Image (cartoon, rainbow, N blue to C red):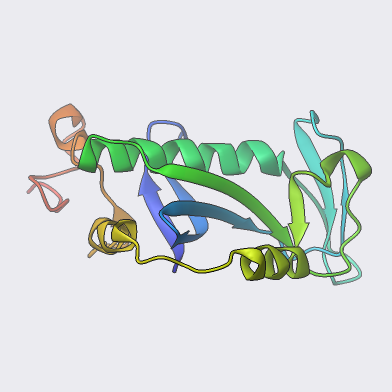
Length: 169
């Protein structure tokens, strides 16, 4: 399991996106967005969701979390393909604490911790996975950002150096 992975991408203005968690089970890669909220007030197609944290003033708006995790999934798929020239099987998960109030039309997309545990428990037997080893090699970032190998050739800004991601100069 890997947490808080910053992945280089063309899908965001800053050029990276942070994936909360990635894990692999039975050759399926799970890209997980974690939200520590007590309630979500939104509909599936809303551009922004209102969420309520556990503090009294913990109300905030955020990009539709389904879209947010889709950016993470697409960025990870791009990274994986650039590194391996193949696509893994991916599952996108959005996880909230038990007891979080989830609107009816989001219940097929947003899961509680208990639902995740039940799902993982329902998988009979985990088989040995080669994808775990691939992820371990791919997601080890020396400077905190997982670099795409195909981006080195695309660098027009001079901010990336040779393979290894060290700055020019």
